[in-house]
Image 1 (cartoon, rainbow, N blue to C red):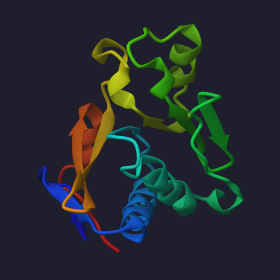
Image 2 (tube, rainbow, N blue to C red; image 1 turned 30 degrees about the vertical axis):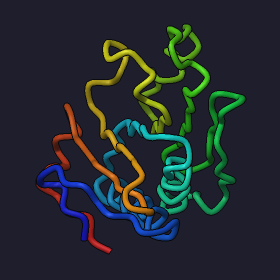
Image 3 (cartoon, one colour; image 1 turned 120 degrees about the vertical axis):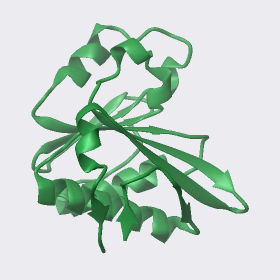
Image 4 (cartoon, rainbow, N blue to C red; image 1 turned 135 degrees about the vertical axis):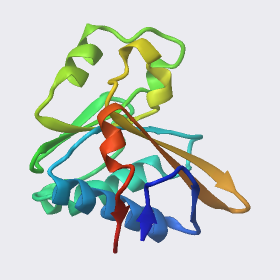
Length: 161
């Protein structure tokens, strides 16, 4: 079980644990019919795309999706319900996002999963979101989930496996 009632680090000993947390998040969002923007930050190799693969696999239609990092094309769209937009802002490090990025993020009828969300200026981030920070910790990984705006609806909830 993952308790979202308070912020605490979650230990992810391996890739399978990262995928499983992603699957639990995907199932949880689906069961609630609530799809907040989810921002991922962390060093290269901490499991951002892996966790996104887990989330997408748990969504209706996720078995049709081929999840890969959109580092070079900026965004991938997956045939899930709701549609999933997977954005990677790594190439924008230190730059202001252009109008194309703003238009991508403005879509309300889709799940937005955004890698390197910390590269987006705070003023351009959705108020309602879930932030997932991943970092290396003692040879494994650690995830810290924080909630803001409508994401607060999740605070008193648990994700049960």
